[in-house]
Length: 214
Ligand SMILES: [Zn+2]
Image 1: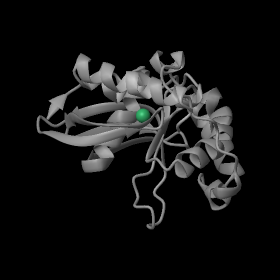
Image 2: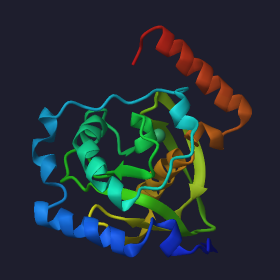
Image 3: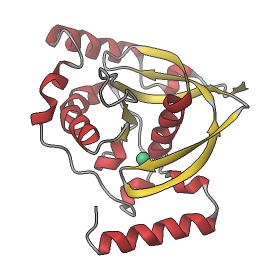
Image 4: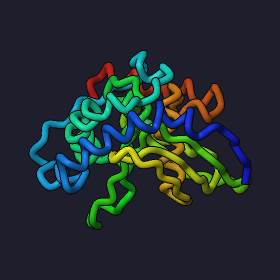
């Protein structure tokens, strides 16, 4: 495992007491953070930006405790967009929000949903063992390529209740989390490819978008 030592308290957002305020507010308002998913099919999907939209290349800023109410308002439209696509991950910059959070749900289509919202996520450790997996992206529709990334990771993030969560991920989940976290730094999966391959994909995408294919 490769260590990425960081000061957790500073990197995960501002002072703990601010998060505690938002946590108290949140739990008093809803029993479950994902209640809105029961009616998600009726929610209009938030439009997803397609590369080369400039916001996809920007480094997103940290989510602060006072952003949580706004963030929660964005979730129904974002989950609707991700599930309708269908996709297994969606980062805030993909809907034009320069904030460090992302949605992930790698459950099979006919299985119960396993929604996650990762707020201010950080990779704590990643494996030396690498894995090759074919990736696509809702911001690069119809484009796919094999990407090499660490096979397993430990990620630390805040959940919707403002709690700090650490969890291990491998396989598809590890790939998906790393892909979504890249978006928060303005990185797309094609950036992991050779320049030749990346240019080929970006040209093909531009051509298809011009022809109106989605
Ligand atoms: Zn993506």
